[in-house]
View 1 (cartoon, chains in turn red, blue):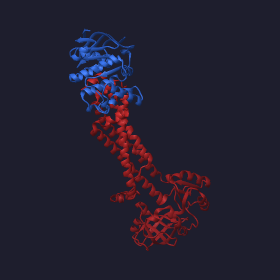
View 2 (cartoon, each protein chain N blue to C red; view 1 turned 45 degrees about the horizontal axis):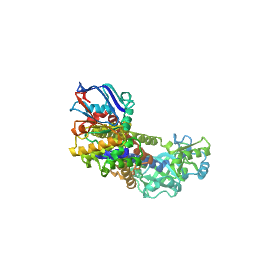
View 3 (cartoon, helix red, strand yellow; view 1 turned 90 degrees about the horizontal axis):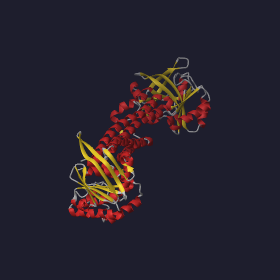
View 4 (tube, rainbow over the protein chains, first blue to last red; view 1 turned 120 degrees about the horizontal axis):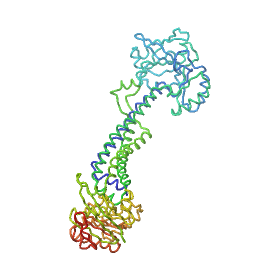
Length: 405
Length: 224
């Protein structure tokens, strides 16, 4: 009956309760939407990094991450390949040769990050293949090269044009080769497109005179959440300090830190929205208590304990908060579900987004834990907001309250 | 059997910092089954005394004993329990809970006692039939006349079988016929159920029916 009484009390002043109810609904939608957008930014940054080049796990010679020189190639690539071929949870892997160099066309030249790839395997590792906007992906033919759109524009080259690639060999002399542009890619990351070029691994090895040597194994897993576990298993199988086996979280520490910070900064959003809601609820519940002083006096007179009156006021606020949050979460959830499918088109800001490695279309998403966070936090805020009015209510003296006009 | 013993009661209010004596040296004993009227002009102290009997207020001096309980020695929670278990209240403005129906208003104090829903519904309905207000069961206070509301408030006051019902000007807002019907009802409850009724009123109808009339003037008992 207390529940019934609390529920009916809420709707005594419909307009006031509706204002609080709507503010709670809007609060819940705002938090969910903001979480969704933040997740869209962060997930896309992470996903793009992983799918462009980082992959889920990388294996190098120990020290390669800090010193990417041509001499630091993987000690026994055949051993690594055998282990990876039988490792459960591994979806695909590919060998890479990596070095820094210079790429020149007839008109211009540019410093580059030169990667030799296995054309038949790399397509499962990196999404560069799917971002080809002109020409085609590597086929294994001699002299093929892929350039990003920005770099092709800088060098002023088109499909079929020749470019010359140069990089240091093991002994410090310059190794070079002539390539013919077969494909131009354009990813969401403009910085990546400006500096990364791809050639066939065997040509990379012959140009730099390191036959059979590779600098990196890039591994994609069936489930990225198992990266730590599989990473440990691979380390144990290699059982050799000559290797460094790193997960994407270790390879992208700044991005992971940024994601963690962004998630933690959501508490600030919770705090601001919560603060706004608390004052709204305090105001509304105080008015509700002052309007009912006489009635509260009667309840005290007929023997209702102060704890029950306290509970009744909190219950009224909790019900308002709970239903507001449920409706807000449902509306927010539907909105995010729709937008996660259609995306939010931010083409107007495409250039600046691309410089952060984010596409022009954002796909917001919220996790169950974030949804539960909203469903729990706002009702708690509602209860907290009702404490002061409830204290006011139980401090009433029955005689004075009954006489109150 | 004595149910209320008030000795040397004094009550002084502060009205904007000015002390106002509402009761002075009041000694009174109320026995079980009485139909007692506290009468007097406005400001004579009758409502103040009624509130003190109901443990709704504390005397400035003196002591009130309700059955075996010394009210001054009880805390807020104990006083609430005493009111809930032993007392019923009827107010001038009926003061039913506006968002509850008539039957829910009657059930409310049973709910506070922790009586199961089925039992309290049966008991409330039975009492409503006895008071001939069962047709009002699903009506809210706003849908009832003053007389109907006051009958419901009588039902609310007696449903827990209290030792005493304290009624403050229960007929003040009713026409004489409705007031008479209501008083018939309360007299019936007094006679049949032996519930003690204490009224604070200046309604002659009630005074005429009183088994005992206590007349207050300027905060003192002038006539008993």
